[in-house]
Image (tube, rainbow over the protein chains, first blue to last red):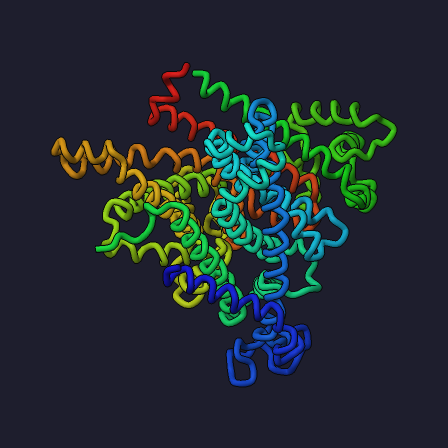
Length: 272
Length: 326
């Protein structure tokens, strides 16, 4: 493991811990109003306060959980979907492959954001878990495509042929012979999906189609934007949440580089 | 030509899937927001407009789903997307045709700039591996992890609020009339600078990283070694041998990333109140204007598919293997 990967894992664990304990260590109730209206960062309010005197530091801490939950739920759901579709298509070949590949390409080409905005705004209550499920339905296609390509290259290898010749069942070959060789691809697909899901959830919250009753980093930005934080020069209202998003995204990308370098030795650092 | 024909038929299938999803969504999801809208607008709708909303949103329950589907296609082919509730009583098709050119101009130009710039930087970064160019990687990773709209907010707060250099919202200065005059065009360009820079900076990183990694992989190929052994110039090997092969995945990836980039760019339009489809979509969300939102979705999908077809033509020109099979 190189420095970049360790750094990525470190940041990710930091946010995971905040996601778990954020509710308890938040100094204030994130929705409670106070008399310190729109005050810049200070000892009492580390990230300043909003127009109605809510503590932004507490909002960021409490909001971390929503972000991490959506990332994790989408990551798992979409990865499972992509394995089912991608490995099946690559391993079976023929008409099943054609149909499944066309399906994942259709999902890749259609712009996901406007579609999800429509679905989310038609749902009567768009809470965190429901949004995670909807995002997963659009997030699996990329992983499926990569897995299919990788499976195609594996299915005629000698060890697979040997398993077939010894009369193993198809599902057993897929689970015990093919899947272990796809772990690096699956892992990087998982991390990529988490990035995609987190970004999409924050975007949806920012646009205002997700229920605003639970806090996440996107809802903070939504309130900042709808109260004209920019025009009033209240930079502290939208800078912390955005930096957290960028940090989390960078951490996940760094982890993905680590996985890529592990799978593709040519990308590793050249030693002088 | 079979390559293009196959791609074109795939895009037709995708278009059909998008239109059918648009047809099914309001019918599958619970609640009846459009009915509520119609009740609220009551007497202000004439019977033609009512009829088209009934067709588009499946409120006519006496008909079978199949008949509804046929009617729906009929309405689409006539260019009838219903009436917008936000810009009542303007038809959705009119709202979209006014905002589409702004989006095509802004997103089209910035995407091409970002692709060319990112690919070029990626070529150098991959070729000069191990030099200072490697420090670009963490920087671009960080930039690509920033949501487009947040970068837009930062850009506005720095270049419009703190240092009022450029306008923060709109497509042209208030009080000007759209026409082919120097003043108007200048104003349009001035207003496009900040949103344009935002989109380029957020989307360029992906191209740099993808191109760099492909260059690194390609540089180790035997044909590059042979080219070196022949004593060809560095520039020739870099562009005509390595880059030309390395760029192929970027171009086929172009098709697949476009949907994502367009999504981000629509958000930039919202932040900058740029008069394109993104801002229209934003206004539609606020008012729960389903005919407008669905219209935006269809038009964006159509635009993305056309752009994809163009990328495929580019691929055809660069990769002789796709030409030979036909």
